[in-house]
Structure formats: structure tokens, C-alpha cells
Amino acid sequence: MILVLESVTVHASELQPSISLSGAYITCSRSAPNCIPNDFYSNAATANHLVSVKPRGSMSALKKYFQVPESGKIVAKIDELASVAPEINLYESKEIRRH
Image (cartoon, rainbow, N blue to C red; front, side, top):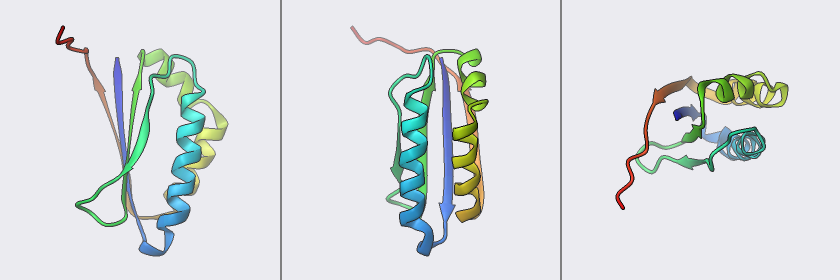
């Protein structure tokens, strides 16, 4: 599994538009093949900071998703609202089942 963590800090005046765009981005993401449920969150410790968590079934599924024009357009719009350069981190992981 590939775990994608994306974060962006936006100007206070751009928080609501950024939340709307993030919602659209997650909706687009959820329609991608091999998508595992994902969402975005507001960081309570840092004002105007949004974080999305996107598990993907494989690196090939992630690469296909990054080629979807709609998601790229949304990311570009969010980037324009950023007060700090957005970050994206990829991790390879394996689920640990407790039972």
C-alpha cells in the first residue's frame, strides 16, 4: 500500500475556498481505481493548515491517479491559495491486523 500525505497552509482569507477545493479533490480521488477511503482534515494545532491522507492500493494506481487532469487542475488552484509551499510525502506501508 502507498500512503500519500499532502498538506497545505493557506492565507486566512482563502481558508473556505481551500476547504471547498479540498472537498472536490477528495471526491475526485475517491473515484479513482484502487482508491481506499480517504479524506482531508483541518490541523487544529496550526491555523489554516489542511492535510489529506490518501491510501492507494499500489504505486501504479497512484501514478494513474496523478495523470487524471481534473485532480491536477484542483491541485493547481489550491497551490495558488497557499501561503507556504504545499508538501506531498509518499510512504510504502503494510497494514498490521490486530485480530
